[in-house]
Structure formats: structure tokens, C-alpha cells
Amino acid sequence: MAIEVRIPTILRTYTAGAKSVEGSGGTLDELFSDLDARHGGLRERLVDDAGLRRFVNVYLNDEDVRFLGGLGAPVHDGDTVTVLPAVAGGAS
Amino acid sequence: MRYDSLLDSLGGTPLVGLPRLSPGPDVRLWAKLEDRNPTGSVKDRPAFYMVAAAEKAGLLVPGATILEPTSGNTGIALAMVAKLRGYRLICVMPENTSVERRQLLEAYGASIISSPAAGGSNEAVRVAKDLAARNPEWVMLYQYGNEGNALAHYESTGPELLADLPEITHFVAGLGTTGTLMGAGRYLREHRPQVQIIAAEPRYGELVYGLRNIDEGFVPELYDESVLTGRFSVSAPDALRRTRQLLETEGIFAGISSGCVLHAGLALAEKAQAAGQRADIALLVADAGWKYLSTGAYGGTLEEAEARLEGQLWA
Image 1 (cartoon, chains in turn green, brown):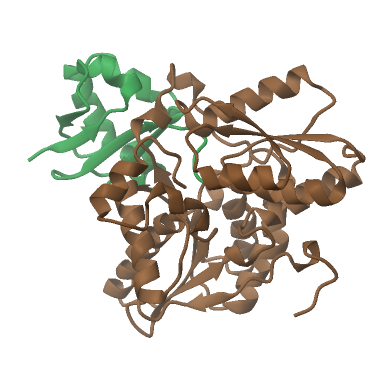
Image 2 (cartoon, one colour):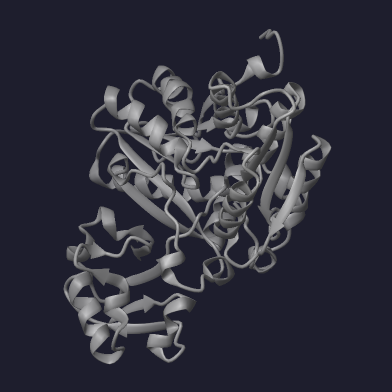
């Protein structure tokens, strides 16, 4: 078992076009570092010195990680992490 | 109930229990039916507030032109007010929205400028900002950054919820401009500090997230993360399934964004039930299903409906 990470179209240049990749770690931070070892440069597109980048949303099993501890959010085998760019959405 | 005019009948929408969807007597779900507003959606509240504020500030004078990026409901609400007050309305709307929204806007006399499907509402915002810069005489109310949007919910939606459900523990609403959650959320927090304010946002197909660069992303100026306690991303299949469940179990014919809200609400209810905690969870039903019938969301199998929604701005 591993953690499935879904990658948005705009970041698939880092995953050789793959829609989802697998990684491991005890926290989101560790997971991103693990991914970066195989998909160099990906982490830097998601994270800056202040934490998650402003226009990057990350969902752990459909819940926004910013409300689950951010980069420190615990992750487990079998979880699904979805990365999406922040866009104007919803009914407006 | 009697009102002087349609505009005067704004708000005061019913809060109805969802006895069949609620897990038990201690964990109850409630739906605030915002389709019972003058043009059939929650957006009448911010639209009327923003117009009134602009009139008061002297920005809107008779004959003025209003410009607004919208995926539908705000535009329809503004179109009705504009018609009654003698303004011209131009809506910038993504081309991948349902035909009913266009028909309603046209019926109220609004003009529509289509923005590209790729990028969704992001593109509509970009196009509208560009048009506003080139046409300084037009008035862009700009729902994503207009304090009147959140204020409408602070002064109406929030107080109505608290009056009808003083024991409220959770409030769940869709996340678009963020105005509903910011305004009603702040009001409820002031009166019930422990209340949970939960956002449910639609997760669209890849087309909508097709930005050229991640730095072109967009967070509404109104958004203040500290108001929320949680935020759920809801896929099209989950939203469709819950929209149909709401109709089949409670008889409520809601728009698809309400499926997102119910999906999050049921997860919260289940969690409270498992923990043995009392919960009164208010769900905001933003509109009814009429405007989405042509999307095929309510007929055929879920798989067929999901395939038809691909690439559409369905909420």
C-alpha cells in the first residue's frame, strides 16, 4: 500500500504526464519530499517558505489540508491526496 | 405573507428538517431553502445588497451599465434588479454553463459575453476585469471582492439561521465567491463561538483547472480562511448522487451544488453520530434544480449523468 497523489494537468510535466503517482511518508511534508526524489522540482511548485503556495489547494481524502494541519497533516497508506490549482469555482 | 413588491420579499426563507437523512434524534440535518428567493437563488441577497450600496454611494445612476462575471445565479439576480431599476446589465459568463441560465438572463434583458470554457469562472473574472478597465464608465459590482456580498449574509442569512436554529452546531454551504460562508459564518461565530463553518466546493473536470500557469490561480478577495473550520472538495459523482438522494428521500428538488453541501453534511452527521455528540447541522440549498434540467443530471443512470456533466460548470 502507498498514498495515491493526483496531479493536475498543469503539473504533469513533473510526472512524465502521469495523472497520479504514488508516494509515502508520515506527514504531507514527508510525502512531498518523497515525491520530489522521483519527480524532481514538483515540491517547489507546491510549497514555498511560508508553506503551501497560495494558489495550490491540496485535499486529503477530499478535505482541504489547510484545516488538517497543513504540511504537518498526518497521512497514511491508502489515503488519496488531490492537488488542484485554486480557481474561481462554485455557483457564482 | 404580503409584500409591497417582489424585491421586498427577499430572504426569510424556510429552514426545513431532513428527518429521513438525519441519523437520529440527537444528530439532525436541516436545509435552508434559498430557492424561495425572488429569482430563485441565494444570490438575490448579495445582488440586492450590492446594487443598493452602489446606489447609495452614487456609483449607480439611472441608465448606468452594470458589468459582472458570473456563472449564472448572481447574473440572474442582478438582471432582475437592473430591469426594475433601469440599468443595463452585461454578464461575462463561461460558455460551458447550462442553457437555462442564458435563457433567463436574456428574458430579463441582460447581455451576455461568453468567456472560454477552459479556465471556467477564472476566465470570466479575467475577461470582466479587462472589460472594466477598458470601459471605466461601466460599474462592476464584482461579487468576489464586494464587501456587500458578505454583508448581505451577515445581516440576513446568518440572523435567520440563528433565529430558526438557536442550537446550531454546524453550517455548511457551497464555496464560490465565499460570500455566504464569510458573512453568515462570521455572524454565527459571534453568537455561537463553537459553531463549525464548513465549505463544500465542487471538484470539476480537468478543463476548468486548465490554467496556463499555476500563478494564474485565483482566490476571491473576500475569502478569509480563519472563518472556516473545514473545507471539502466534492466530485461530480458524489454531488449527483446526493442531489438525487435529497429528491428521493426528502422530496427536495435542488440544484447540483446542494448535492455537494449534502455530501459534506452527511459526513459531518456520521462523524457526530459515531462520537455520540449532539449536532444540528444547517445546510444551505442555494437553488432549485430547474436551471440544470438540460444537463441531464436528474435522469438516466448516474454514470450517464456524470458523463454529460464532464467539462460543464455544473454548480
